[in-house]
Amino acid sequence: MDLTTTTILAAEGGPSTILTSLAILILAAFVGFQVISKVPNTLHTPLMSGTNAIHGIVVLGGLVAIAQADGFLSRLLLLIAIIFGTINVVGGFLVTDRMLSMFKRKPDPAPAAEEPES
Image (cartoon, rainbow, N blue to C red):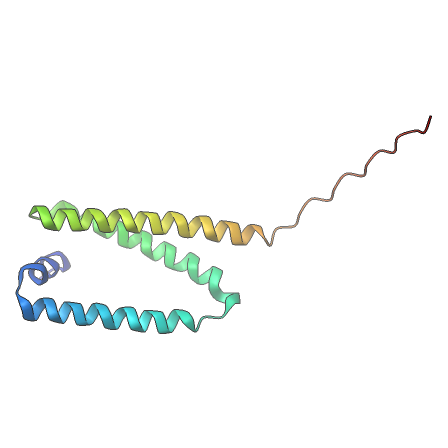
C-alpha cells in the first residue's frame, strides 16, 4: 500500500483512522516545535537551507500524488498543500539569501574628489 492510498484511506476510513491521523499530526507538530526551538542562532541559516531542499522534494511528491489522486477532495487538498509548500520553499530561499547577503563584504566606497576653493 503506497502513501497516496494510505492518505486517501485515512481521509475516508472512518473516525478511528482520522483520530489516529490527527493524533500523529499533533504529536509531530509538538516534537517539531520542540526540536526547532532548541536550534542555536548560528545554525539557523544552514538548517533552513537544508529544510528548503527537503521541502522541495515534498512538493515534488505532492505533484506525483496529485496525478494519482481520485476524487475532488483529494485533489483539492493536494493542490492546497502544493501551493503552501511552494510558498514555503520560495520564501525560505529568499530569507536564506537575505541572511547570507549580510555576511558578504561590502565594496569600499570611492574616495570623494575635493572641490577647489575659488
